[in-house]
Image 1 (cartoon, rainbow, N blue to C red):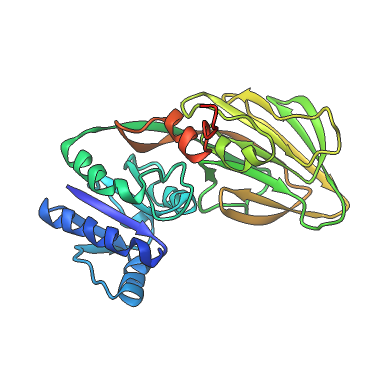
Image 2 (image 1 turned 90 degrees about the horizontal axis):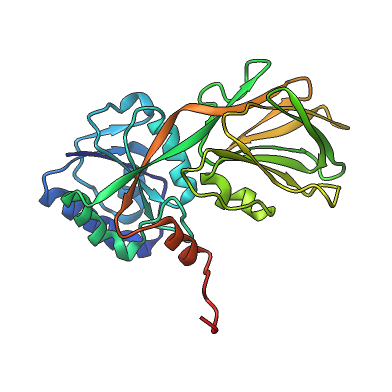
Length: 294
């Protein structure tokens, strides 16, 4: 077995668990490649030099011989990991060294059993849809124009609203007078979209959520649309430039640029332990059922 390890950093409280992971890898003769800046962090911050076979810096350094891509961190790190895996088909494994963790859902105290289950083949895979951004002019997110969670357009100043003219398959839907607009996947339904009142979708549903950010109209609400629809956005306002974001990556674009969002032609494969379920994650992460009446 060959695994890739990716991360940015972690707190001291996670150090013992991380070192234990390498004990398991060594015991099972697992070949490890690691993101080199993460390797440098391990040596510099925790004085640990893990036994690895090689390093990687970008998606081009990976090959399909990698069986699992471990993301060590929180959901932000997991989203960064997607930019490495891309359409390779390498399964992602989310190890949570942070706090909440919807996608990085293997908690620190679950790591020993999780690794045992992985070695024993006690897992399944979920296929997660991504969205793809196309623009009327080159220059936006050319290196990787996909998102697992959401695409967001937002005003760049704190003064005035913007207007986002929205079309579904070229049919006019609405002009949102708001601070911004979120186009979320089912995976992203528990992220930014949720915080502005969007619904939660089951991961394998074939939909997008269109969620306005602080709309200036009481009747405007998030809407769920099929993800085989193409969404077109045209933005205008007092400013000539606006902020566009694909997950955690952002850039500035001009009002003359038309934005098109559609379902990507590939999916991300995510490892799920048989002891985990999406509904259980909702209860645990959002603290559903934490009520003295239950």
